[in-house]
Amino acid sequence: MSGQRSTRRAWGMSLAADAPAAMESDRYPYPTRPAVTAVMKGNRKTDTRPEVALRSALHRSGARFRKNHNVKVDEGRAIRVDIVFPRAKLAVLVDGCFWHRCPEHGVDPRSNTAYWSPKLMRNVERDRVTDLRLRVGGWTVLRVWEHEVTPSKMARTVEAVQGSLARRGPGFLNRESRSMTAGQV
Ligand SMILES: [Zn+2]
Image (cartoon, rainbow, N blue to C red):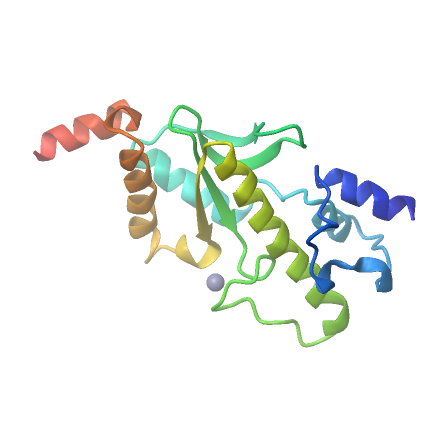
């Protein structure tokens, strides 16, 4: 019981009021494996391969940002964001296709579906709560799927991030990007 309570507390806010049925975890055993526990607590793994790939590509494009930065948006727990542009208040989060149920690759696992489906649905639910908290706090949220940072799609994804930065105002483009833009004009 204390495990569940601490999980709720770890989320930083009470989700009980509008929690869908899938979030009722009472029927499921509290996980003991550290990885699963981390997922339930909402501790996103940091420095995953897709994250590192996107950060490298962004850095090469001239973008300057903070990584794995804690963003405080309300009285709740700070939100750990993969890639943060603090002045532009742009939060970029890289979501694993399996863990965050990408519509293309986020298929339910074949085995132990009864156990995993609610966990994954809870991840997605928590993602939406995170988005809402960030937006209410004045942040722009850009979620990038793992499959969007593959070599063939990276350029488009970097463009999307730069586009979001530009929409926040020309002053938010970093010095390198500005000089690149000026050079093209
Ligand atoms: Zn995917």
